[in-house]
Structures are given as C-alpha cells and as structure tokens.
Length: 482
Image (cartoon, rainbow, N blue to C red):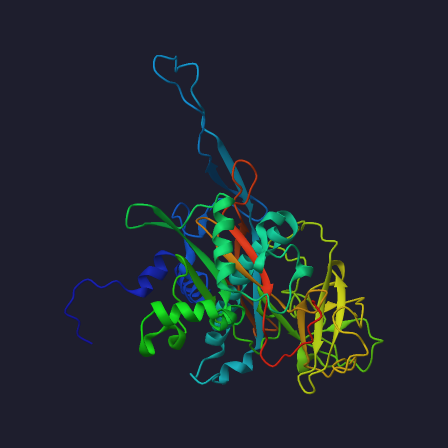
C-alpha cells in the first residue's frame, strides 16, 4: 500500500519500546468501560476538584499501605482591635490528615481453549473479548458497590449522626410503609448537611446576592419512584415546570429540588450469579425451597441454586448487599463491631403470601443467612391470612424493619464526601494458563481503598444517609407499623 506520509508511528514500534504498552492500553480501555458503568461517574473528580467523590493516585503505595489526604479547619477568634498588640495573639493553622488504606482487589474468569472456536453474544465476540467485557462489568460494579458500602458502614456503625430517616423518624423501628422518599426528605438532607458542616459542591447566588448551596442526593429509580406520587411534587410540576410532553412528569427527568440535584441509578435486577441490585436497594432470590418453618439457613441464588450447592462467598455473594454483612475493602481489614439484629421478608410472588425472619450480623457471610429466627410475629403474625412458611425457590427476600417495612437508602453528598485512593497499579490485566495452555484464565486487579474524610473535630461532614421505606413492584404488605 502506498503511503504519502513519510513518518508514521507504528503500533509495533511502541510495543518494541515498551514491553508493557499492550497492558497499559488494555488497562485504559477497561478503566474507561468500567467507569462508564458506574452511576457515580458524573460525581467523580481528582483530589481537590471539589467533586463529591475525589480520586488520588500514589504510585508508591502497595497493599496494606496508606494514602494520605490533608484537611484544614477554618480559624476563629475575635482578632485584635485598634492599637491592641497583635503579634502575641496570632492564630495557627489547624491541619488534619486522613489516611485511606489501600489493598489489592482481583477477579478472574477461566475457560477451556475450545471456547475460542465459538462466537459469543449477539455481537459475535471472541472468548477473549467476552472475558474483557465481563472484567469491565465486574470492576464497574465493584467500584459502585464499594462507594455505597463505605457510606452505609459509617452511617450505620461508626457515626450515627450521619444516618437520618424520612419524616424525622427517631429510629428505624418508627418507619411506616408511608415513609417513602419525599420532597421533605430532600430538604431535610440539605439542612442536615449544612448543620453538619458540609461543603457544597457549588454555590449559586440569589437575585440580591444571597448564597444558595448545591448538594447531590443519590438514590435509585425504585427508591425515588415515590417522589412522583407525592402531591407537593405534582403541584410544583404542574404549576412551575414546562408544559406539554417536556414536563418532568412525562420525561422522567427530575428537576433540581431547592438546588439539590437528585441523581438516580437505573438499577436492573440482572441474572447475575452473585449479589443483585445495589447496597442501597438490596434484594435476593431464595435458593433452596422452604417446605415449612423448620429450616434455619436461608440460601440465595434463585433457581440456579435450588440445591444449595453454591456455597463459596467469593463467587456467590447473594447477601453481600444486605445489612449486617461485613463488607471489606482490603485483605485483613477489621470491620466495625456489629451486634445488631436485622430483619427480612420472604415473599412468594405466586400467591402473595410471606413470612418475616431475623438474623444477626455474625450469621450473614454474604452467601447465606444462618441461624435465622423464623415466623417473626412483628412482621406478620402466623394467624394472618397472608402468612405462609412454605416458600418456593426464587421467592423474593427483602430487607425490612422489625415491623415489616421494606428498606431503602439514599445518600446526600457535598464536596469531597468520599475519597478513592489508588496505589501502584489499577485495573491491570492478569492471565493464567494451565494444562499445556488448554485451560486459560483472564482477570483484572488493582490496588485501591475508600474512605470519607473527617474534619478536624472528628465529624464526617460531607455526607448523610437517608433511610426510608420503599415500594417494591408486585409486593403487597400488611401494615404492621401502626
């Protein structure tokens, strides 16, 4: 082929100059694909960017080491007046540091060499391309769930002041079926952030110069669906929003509410072999059927695990999104103590009957719920017509309050609500071959960690978690919360 340009950069030359060039290109592609699958993507930026989630890379850090972030406090005092001496009354900077421990995360898929002769999925993928695709999917899901789990862990077990409830309910036990996410909850979160010292992500001006802080409320479509059923929301959309088919009520695009941006994750309940949905919208499908009230181990996985044979939490983490699971971010991490009792509903979609169960954190290993208490009467008495203790495989398992109110969570954020620290490498390819190269494995690994920064007086100022009831399509419940 004739080429008129006399100087052409060739891929072969780049590979020859840098043996790791192909690995770097693979890593960049996977990072790009994985980040596109993360609903937090619009909220992420580099350290110091003022975005809700800030990333910092320290290439010198390996597993178990700490990446350090620095915070500063505003300085107070009366100052001096007139001819009063100043030099003996100067203030000093009040610095704080916050360290995020990083560790290696790795995942892989293996396959027989014969699969290379197949073309997979509708777009005619090779097995190598399919492996790359599932690696990107897994990495994106890991990052998304890690972020949510960090917020939930702090609010549940470390800093209770960061957990609020819709309609200003005092405790989870006080929630009713009517306490779904509403506009009052959005306004409540805004005020909770302000009183806890949050830095807004942006400040706008009123007509006469007053400041209007802007924050983010992150939720899911299911958790936030109740907003559009609220009369106050409907009135505002009817009177103040665009008319016709551009109205948010028709488009589904929510406007800002008092300058708080509501960002919703479109959670799809997939056919995943592991956990489903999100930590802020958890759900599971019953694996092995329950014939009566005698069984005290609840398995997940739906019809795929109807024989309860899938027991490895590293592969089949059906209950990892449920409250009580000790989610960790690096090897050897000590999780906060959790002596709480948690509740769930097992719901038969066929006949609409259900049962309440309870379990402790110690008995949720991510794969199954063990030593559960069956027939919890505060969720549904056994003499109720809707009660049943027999549940077929694939019945829904839904986290709830002790009074049977299904639970969901939304996260309010200001600037630098969460820190994402990365170490020496991130989202790099790994591979393995065995049996004379007839069995192959492809995977992904990286060094990273997460944390929410404290201010200089020990608060986590830049986020709040809102706990609320959630309506689940196809699920009708008896109100036991009165």
